[in-house]
Length: 361
Image 1 (cartoon, rainbow, N blue to C red):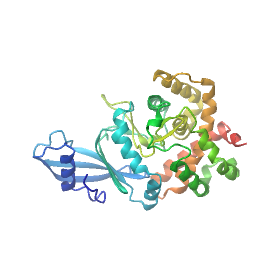
Image 2: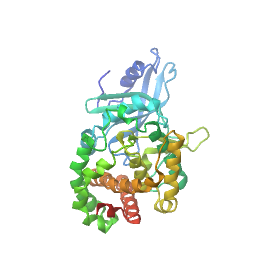
Image 3: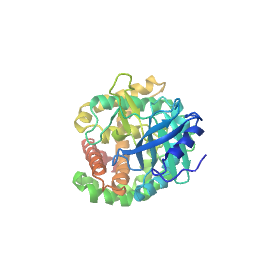
Image 4: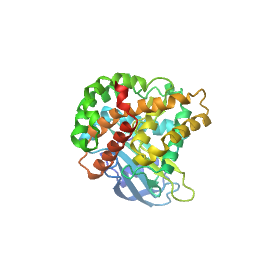
């Protein structure tokens, strides 16, 4: 494999010509004559950057597309360091190259996937004709149903079979778990400092109790049945079809796949991305839809009576996610702050609605 240059400056015509030749995408008799690189999704992703590459070819390009989406390491030093601490580049490149092709979940087609020390590059199909989910706007009922259906397909495929993905960390007893616990204290304080207006009063009083309970919360989210979780299943990581021939939903950003209880993903989406008024009215129906999807995917022996308890436990656990993401990452970008604020506000609302802090007692 050729060494990856500094990105995005290294996405030159010569580099892409060699790369596409090596992957068998571009005929040997042709080359990339010019590259236009436009950064996209600025402020909505945190651990990596995205750019749309428009290529002009010299000669017959064969099956090589005119545009790609390039994903590469963040140039924000704070976010880049945290991404490396959680081993996100390796997790995403391994998932996209080894798991995505056999997953029942719709993901972008990958033309190239490479990891080189602390740099990575993924060249994907350009799905800019799809509509990007917005955590600021929040998910409608229809979008929530599509998201839940896709999670059910993902989780059912790996239900009690996630052990085969032994390169993925578990929610507990792993470097991921250790990092979450290490960053939780400073993250909790940062969350209060930056998003205090959106945080419910009881949470501040539960700081020490919550931090002391992290081991127990992680273990609870890592007990059987364990499956493959996306780990960051939120609106900005979803594309929604809006034209004939489009798939209804495409799932992006597989930097943080993890092994754990599927309710981790479900609670993260319903509690932080679904509009609060939609969640309040349709919460139980959406959870029932998730169970129906699991059963349709071949999962047997589900205890429907335990779903609500699992959901509340996962919501409580996800304050750990909120504190680390909103409390430690760079929120100086206006878009970053906006979607995080809504994440915190919705998580606070569902926590008060369902009295999840009582679980700490």
